Length: 135
Image (cartoon, rainbow, N blue to C red; front, side):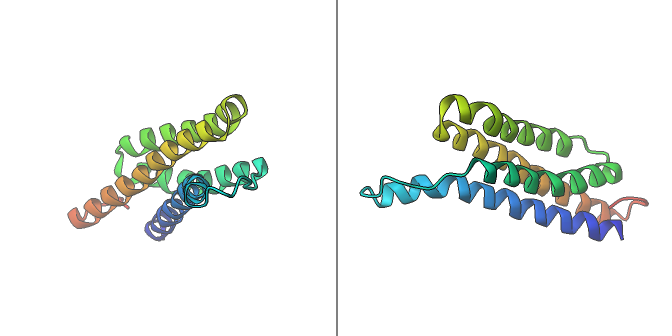
């Protein structure tokens, strides 16, 4: 049962991180494609919800996965990614603008995505080695 929860949470986390990345990179790409458009809606409340959307599956999958395979790399990558995202939304965005926020949030999303990929990889290697009490 825990294997399934970790797997679903990892895939949900990767999806959330990818959606976050698209949200950060989408507006600049659209603005570059359509230079006559000088207005793009921006909602700071959405960023707080995206932060929660990314954090919940990461907490479930990465902590549960770590408890199974004991590889701290997934926690370190996840913590770096979450710290980048929090700093981007809470500090960098208000101080330096949306461009700087998008860059730091994208970096954080990549860290979180990498953490989920490594977690899946470690869980699969545990399953192949048939280690007891491993995801």
